[in-house]
Length: 231
Ligand SMILES: [Zn+2]
Image 1 (cartoon, protein in one colour):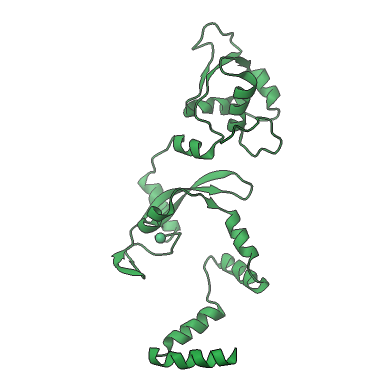
Image 2 (tube, rainbow, N blue to C red; image 1 turned 120 degrees about the vertical axis):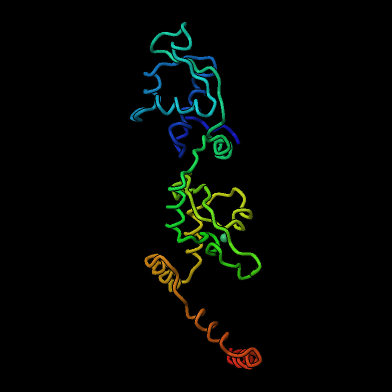
């Protein structure tokens, strides 16, 4: 990934990332800077010096006069760059991971009803398309890309089968809006009602299909023929 400009007005990057780019592009490795220069470069951003220190978690080396006696009290030296934090993939790989407590894990499972958030199967339930295998659900960490382009992480319940098949692709909030834009106005209203209820309801199509399935298999052909004639 190309290194973005630290002062790109279009940038949606967070303060730590822009700070990292400022260090590279303005200060340069080996150069020194003061807190005042930092505040002038990032006006109105509180705790900019703390965001810069966060870079140490990503292998960036910054020295104050504690580590380098040749520096004045207000100076800091940008010794060496670490992980390219502006690259979401690199940053994720390097992110300091915290272990999850069993209490937190339990809370996620309860919130999701012990069901896989991707395919809807519940723990210990056999897969409809593979009844020999029963689902094992667990909590996993997923990256969410929000509507305003930020990346955040969330814990979600997933079954082993979905977890192994999904790879590392993030969940895009935008996908919901893109899919909704394809719906007819009636379906879109129904979709919003489902959101309000927190679960899907059955549609005319579902009801028609369920009624069809109640008909014995050797009689279904007649129904299909009848409908084809009416089209
Ligand atoms: Zn699943």
